[in-house]
Image (cartoon, rainbow, N blue to C red; front, side, top):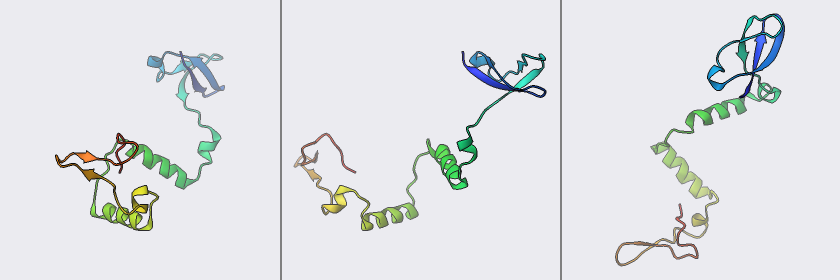
Length: 118
């Protein structure tokens, strides 16, 4: 069973073991038996974090399951990255080394034919 933090209005913070099903329920204060709400303790590093960093983390959390949409703007941005050299090996070698066989199948002339390039 996990340990949860609770806060009594009179006596402050205390912790209790509780089943996960009971995690949202209030617990009795060990000193006065008053029902106390569960609190979530945050480390100081989260509270002192720069606003830009918090916004970036929140944006990443919101977008972690969203598909990426191709728009004219994103295609233009990607084209600019390729022109500047984004670090991809295909831009440094002058294009993709993908070949097609006579039957129309893809052929990767490399030591690792199972790897698909981007």
